[in-house]
Image (cartoon, rainbow, N blue to C red; front, side):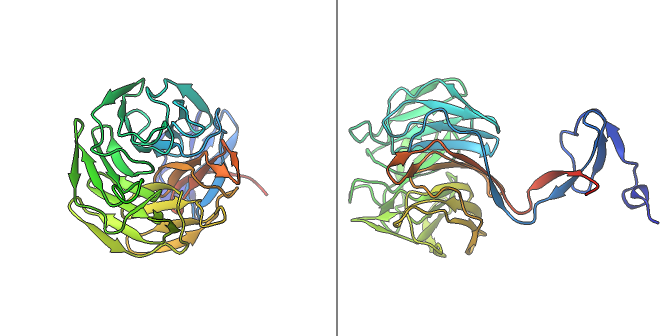
Amino acid sequence: MTTYKEIKGTQIEVLASDPSNPVEGQVWYNSTSNVLKGQAATTVGAWATGGSMNTARFSLAGAGASNSSALAFGGRPYTAITESYDGTSWTEVNDLNTARGQLGGAGTQTSALGFGGEGPPTTAATESWNGTSWTEVNDLNAAKNFPGNAGADNTAALAFGGSPAPSVGTQNEIWNGTNWTETTDLNTARYSMGCAGISTAALGAGGDTIPGAASALTEQWNGSNWTEVGDLNTARYAMGGAGLYTSALVFGGFSPPDKTSTEEWNGTNWTEVADLSPARRYLSGAGTQTSALAFGGLLSTSSVGTTEEWLGAGAPLTRTFTDS
């Protein structure tokens, strides 16, 4: 019979704790928990329940790199509250300077940008997060609600579309760490899209068209121009989004009614995958196509603090072996 060593070239390791960065196919024995474990990859994406937010709200903004590292800020009822997620629970951190909902957000848990929204009134205010506190920086060129959003950190972001109609519905602004500059417009005016990407490579899907209808339209930004690409399977707005412009995830939303639908983008087409639970709209998202977070939102007429963690197909997964 072929042994593990003959296949992998090493013995099964005995470790006091799980390795910090195991590779697919690696097997080890955890001597603290007395279990045999191995590293695999998921075959089908799925949502799992995460820790609930401390403050239930909708029309909030989010930023973050994964389902275990995210930031949630602002929202309605109008608030300045900011919360940080560590993969288990949310912790309240320093507030925004201006309480508002319907704002855009971009970046990571330690380097984020919040822009636009409504206090009321509708605002162009922009704030930068350094991992500890928010600082007011230069305003957007136009005040707007529900802007599309993309960005890697607080020095490079994109704000596109938005409300009110028709003045900012196609408008596109790019942030260089100091100022916003107007650049090439979206092809179709809309707001409250599912968004993904960075300032030079972004995706805006669905949204509420002006004067008001759920859209399935998707546009892709290459740093210079917007191009219409494959439509969503389900037209909707008020979604959450995560990922990059070639590998994105959108979830939830409204068309009506409230949606549970989750769709994956492969750079060409959208594919329906496992649903959220519960259905909700005006939620926020963070992370990547294989490690995303959905949080907050509005279910019927009630704000929710529900958090769900997405583990996509191909994501690394540690499994515990049993004799069953």
